[in-house]
Amino acid sequence: MIVVTPEIAISETEIEEQFVRASGPGGQNVNKVSTAVRLRFDAAASPSLPPDMLRRLRRIAGTRMSRDGVLTILAEEHRSQLLNRQAALDRLLELLRRAAERPKRRIPTRPGLAAKQRRLTAKRTRSAVKQGRGRIRAEE
Figure 1 (cartoon, one colour):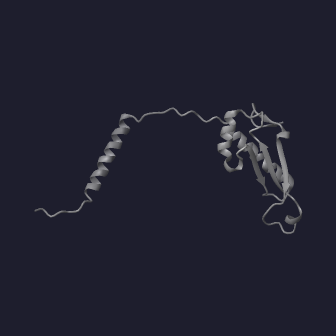
Figure 2 (cartoon, helix red, strand yellow):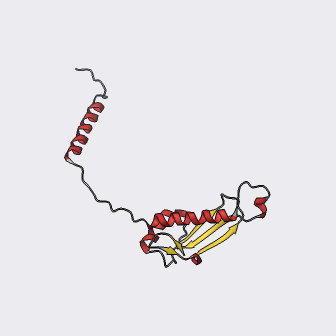
Figure 3 (cartoon, rainbow, N blue to C red):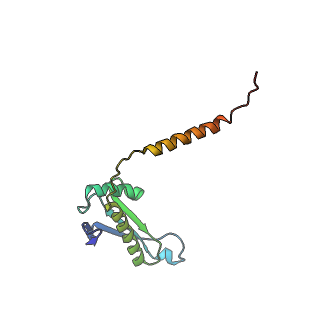
């Protein structure tokens, strides 16, 4: 079990890893060794994730999550398969932890009287400045 938060843990069987060839520099090694890791996690089918967390995860993950709820993470920054596996898992856990945080509920507030007066004074001042920019007309 992989612990996401004290209340939420996902099974290692829910995570699918595939090793692919990495792009970028690395000399001849890059053409021979599959060091990059493509991690897939079917979040929509996971029994561990509550529905509200899944909604937040969809919003946070963006294009990394498909329409059917499969989260894909590609890690290829290291030249070692082991380090890339750990990097991909760390990124998955970071996303899940961010999605697990319930956003604070916003309590709507209204501007106070002093703020309203400051705003109106600023509007009058700005209006006067703009009025002064008009064309100067000759008195008839």
